[in-house]
Image (cartoon, rainbow, N blue to C red; front, side, top):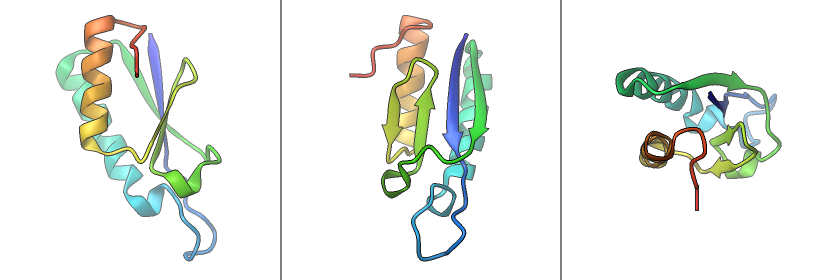
Length: 92
């Protein structure tokens, strides 16, 4: 089973970038909904900071790949690849 983590971290000071401030919580909901609709063998979890705040929202795939600047289009591409390649999508 593939695991996908979405950073939903809020930074302490509002003048600092954070994934949550850039919409990662709604992206997490979208990802969970799409995985369920497509009946994929993927576990989706919220995550604490991944250390790439300036590039967020950030998604980490269990094999170590990151998606920076994630949005619904990139999530859709990821899920299409997971569906096509099973547990070993090629993200490039």
